[in-house]
Image (cartoon, one colour):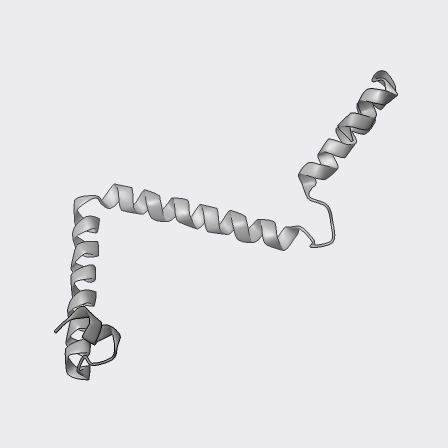
Length: 95
């Protein structure tokens, strides 16, 4: 059957179901093969992904939407601490 037939919905439901089952089965076999061939790499990748997701969620939960980011607050504190020692014209450009 042509690709255009599949796109236009002329693909029989039984063929679609069989195609999906074989595609899922192939993906599952490939994943299992990769896990068997590279177990340490898979564990480290999953661990890293977990750390990244956890850090992203943690940052979203701890910073309020209305508060400025911590980096901006830290920058402002740093500028305030050096303000007495830097000429006013330069401080205006830094802010």
